Length: 586
Image (cartoon, rainbow, N blue to C red):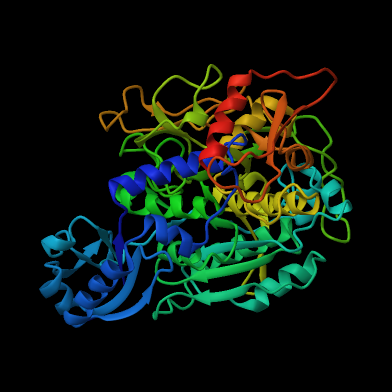
């Protein structure tokens, strides 16, 4: 049996990892000279990858074992190769077996792969030894346009509800920006074109790229997910270039997108239980993405605080509290779900516009939870069982504890108002955090466009936006709709892990909560106020001399500007001296 899409993952040394951690912190610290100083994949490899000589030795070992080396990452931190199951059993000591799981035939290695002792310190694991793939989080519904209390979201509705329309009117439409969508199925361009024609969006075909050698073809659920992600990322940012990278495994597609440095935004609507996803191996690559200026957004999951239980098919959670991967990674922005609560308000027109829009204004939201006869269906969120609380998620406004919390933000995800998509030539409604993630990726493309067009940064790319997200929530709370009702509580089987009362999860509340995060996005304020500092002032250091030698004098300007109002900001001279010492050493 051929295994042609294997990947050998390499890891940095302890010293390299410590250096990378410092760099990532500095890149998101506005006071640091390394703020937003992104690396290319090659620069990342020089600092944090394997040496060229050692990398070549591993390639030579694979070739000597009879494998075919297909691709080497630009950062020298993974190698794609292929061979037979027999070669894997002989060289990696990992026998491949077929098995029946829930009525489906799969293959997998039943023991961990092994490598020669000389390589043990640099090998981080392997991908492609099994066909247990990440799962899509999309739910399909047949839309009944504006029927009863249900409405279906067209792109114009989104622009109205989340106040994106003023950005479009100001010319902020994603021009010059790009988004990478990852997937596990081929697509029909005719669907994407029909969607854009139907909703009067400009023609803009995605750029489709297959990684590896195995085309998975057309898979119904995966193809629906791909259409949803491509159509809605492109609907929110209509002029942005959409790259679609696909293959047998969406997570391997993400590695390819990071190595190729295709786009400053990657959107993933695929997930696994956090404890089943080789978390240490994958985290290294999300850190690489951040260092290159790439923002990764991911669906937070659709089974409430039971991220290891399947959404929409299981009626009781049985596997305990856990979160969805990769959303739970600190280097990823987790996007949860809300649902609209119209009450007695008039938020929808009785007829559709020429673009099929009918929303009249922002609609109040609650945490998304439609758990019922169709199984567990609720916004993923809660405490990670693996990852520590990052520094930007601490403070008196945050829940107590020491674990990473998700989601970070949320957008509409309910069946109640499903997203319109074109799929196999027909019009359908799709719901889930699978929809909120690519929509948020579109908003980030508009943010990148605004930043570049206003001269706030020279090129697109925000890296890990989470630190600034939480700063913005303090500095400009009106950039978010604080969702304070509902929750993601789901029923659980008594006696199963963590199930003491028959249910678990979290209620939405004032400020951050583990059902909706910081809330949903008020897009115009979110984009135009993104750079507002939380401390009320901005500090900018400028060195007039382009190059100085040791002990040479130089000119250093410190500009302190109030964020709003009047007055003269002050600063302790010691902070200036610290920067002077850095510049002197530099």
